[in-house]
Each structure stands twice: as C-alpha cells, then as structure tokens.
Image (cartoon, rainbow, N blue to C red; front, side, top):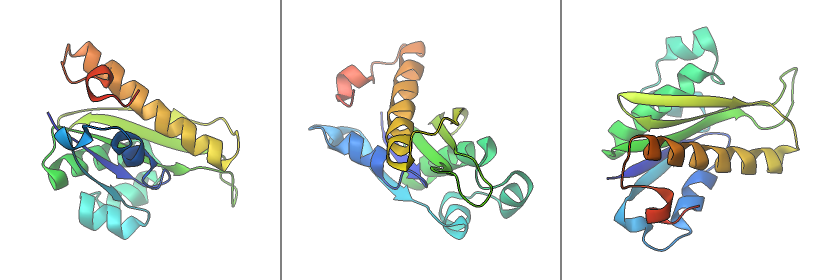
Length: 150
C-alpha cells in the first residue's frame, strides 16, 4: 500500500513526520505543499467553485485534497491539511485535516488555539493518529506500527 500528502497550513510537516523514519520509501510516494489556491486547483483538482462556495479552509477542500493527492501520486491513501493555523484578519484558528483513499475520505476540524507552532504540531499528529485508527478499522496490515511513524 502507498501513501501521499497534500498540505497547506502544515507546510510539509506531515510528510516530514512520515519520512523521519527509516523504511518510509517502502510506502511513501510523495507530498505536495499547496499553499496557494491556484496550486490546489491545478495540481490537486480542487474546483475553483468549491473554494468560492465553501472557502479554502473547509471540510470539502480538505477532503478533495486527499482525493487529488491519491490521483497525483498514484497512491492508495493520502493525508491532507488546510486551515488558519493562527487567528488573523477576523478568522479564528480552524484547521481541517483529512485522510483516506480516493473513494473513502474522512476529516476533522481543530479549532483550539495554542499558538501557531503548536497548532501545526497538533494538526500533524492528529491526522497521523486518525489515519492510523482508520487503517485499524479497515483491519489493514498497513498501520503505524508497521510503518513506524507513531
């Protein structure tokens, strides 16, 4: 089984957490930091209309990023993030992380504010933990214990 990432507010930290462990090359296909909307649209296939309707920081966009990463990297699974890692310009902290396959995507929103750096760390760990639970639910042999990111 293979894995990829599509990240915005985590800026590559999810991919870094995965590749920090030996053996990642056995399953990790690659990652994309899609910080700007046009990159999300062009590289990950996030429809412009979706961003206009729901906002770039939304469940819909995070889940579409998972689907787009699976297609872009030809991976079985992907992890994604989009959000406001700190409050600014009238926005509260809101980080959406998503995980799954092209046809089965799940997501969660983090809204507590512990400061930008800690918020990004928590989002990174959250998506890894949730993905591991998802794999265990599927009774997949591809778990954090096997790939050693926990």
